[in-house]
Image (cartoon, rainbow, N blue to C red; front, top):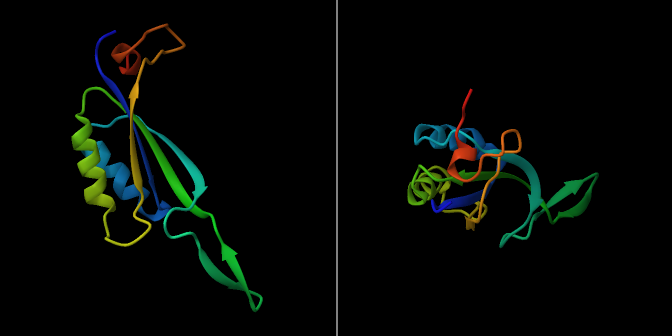
Length: 120
């Protein structure tokens, strides 16, 4: 296995997910794992009022999108995500990029790029 595999994690607000998913689909991203997560970054949460009392909400609801790419260039994925998610305000999200050593499909033992390809 000598082809390059890259994992891209995109963390953003739930309200932006559908637009992000549609944009990624347009550039050829056909598979992703999506999780509801809690987290805080620079904004450190916010205050809400509940029954007349101030409550600190330190962890905010976010969506984590995990993608493994080999066909679509990493730069294309990153630029698409930035274009869709950028508002210029705190809370737009984060993008993490990792090298992937290998991928294995459990059902048939395929590895690397072949494990990511859909076959009937």
